[in-house]
Image (cartoon, rainbow, N blue to C red; front, top):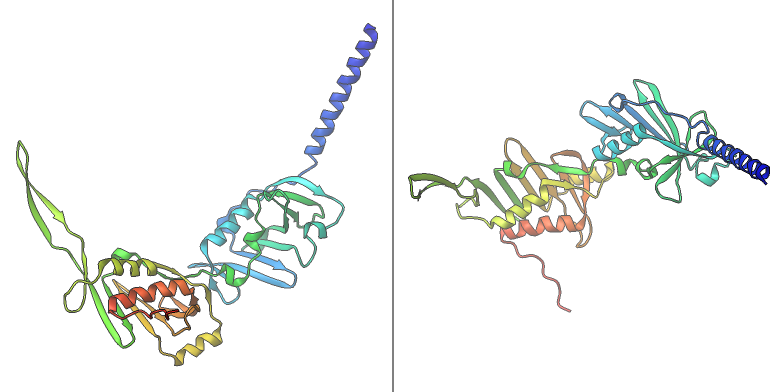
Length: 326
């Protein structure tokens, strides 16, 4: 019995050792280790899908997208750079060459090249998101195996040129604006920020008498010196301070605006001048506009344009269009 127990213990120990070694070998099946990258050295990112290539390029004033050098959205580019830098392979998924299953076949895969001074420093293919939604299927250049990479990031890369464009068309700091000029329906008004007068108040305590200076709020006044509705003016500035468009117009649509007069003009001034022109549109439609901050015409979402026009109407004393009674 003792011999049988000893033999059984030896067999169990052997099996445990075998399984442990086999498990270790499975978990360490030569996963490629990617070298650390300095993303500040990357000056071009090519994203190839099928026969189309979308290029992000680093310029003196920031990143641009496409050969037309449209300004690119900073946060979108930063997300891509972070993914390229931190790409981590966590598991080997397939060696069978079945790429369709993982959307890594030509036409579906996103071929990504991170380039520094003309040299490709990281290159990989992006497939679909894993069922866990916390991983993405990828392949490395020159390697036919399919790996699972940490995080879900296909959506960061699978975008159009329009998606990558910076949609901010007006950007300023509200406290720096000193003059506002509004024009709409033949009515114009210039508002000026009038500094508040400083007042001295005497405050007496048990030991001494101190002078305390109190500062009232600055006030927006009309050309005739009467105060404007401060709340509405602040609402207008808030709606414009970091204005994002819905999408940009093509060249033909932009050229057509040259023969059209804007229905509403807004000019803001501090040490520089900011301008926004809104063009006529049907009620409920997006509104075409131009801005001094960008050479491209664009559309504002109807609700954004509606808010801006409502504030302008209130300041100018224009009646908003009443809804027809049912």
